[in-house]
Image (cartoon, rainbow, N blue to C red; front, side, top):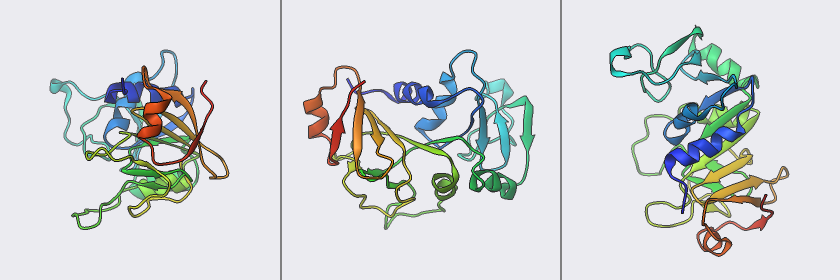
Length: 214
């Protein structure tokens, strides 16, 4: 069976390491914060100027002034710090964030990512995605394997406007996990979701890839 949204987040949390500074994109990536391994210290950073985000609040803890970049209400920690958006992006552009986990509309087998707009639809802004994929040390994409029409989102080349070219390191889809070769020459399938067969994932994937299951 394909991974659920929560299972995707749980799998993505395996990419965390103790002491990491991490930026989570909106949607499924925000769920990764619920799966930090016990005993591990991870500091979450938000583009809107917050370092050290706490868990999502219970109803009686909601503070409308405490939000992440996706406008979700969050909580603070004793070590939380606040700063301007310019300082926040300086952290990102300066390579001080170890890992970002983002959603995507499309990913190419060469590591390209498209996740900020669909031509013809209203776009309020690109957010921080372009800075994240250019400045963060490791980029992990968490996404549905196919779109609502059943078409593969893991492609030979992206059709939508790019967020970044050759920037993705790892793709975690509902069907499996693909590493992007460091030289951008293709993908390596390293893990399958439970009960997903090699034949099924091949039928659902436009991109070409090697198989090296672990």
